[in-house]
Length: 81
Image (cartoon, rainbow, N blue to C red; front, side, top):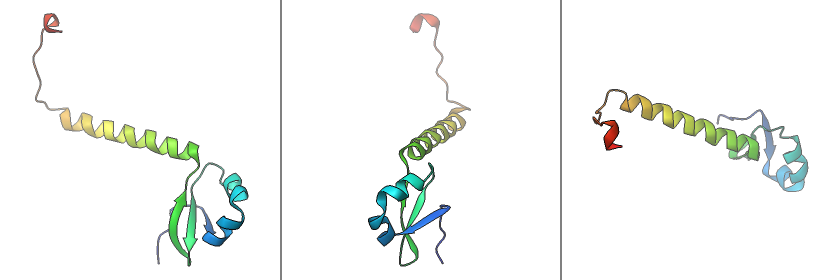
């Protein structure tokens, strides 16, 4: 059985028939689109997608900080800047 990473699911057929209503009911959370009762795709509202990208960027920045925490460092004087 496939794991579904959304609280709301709809079939491909239902999505075709009621696209506008399904988008409206999403309540800023992902919707799993099922094809033959298996997750085929996820529909993400724009606000959720933007938050996801921001979070991903924050995680990438955190990882970069950890990787660079122990150097190597470059010695500079204020005059070099």
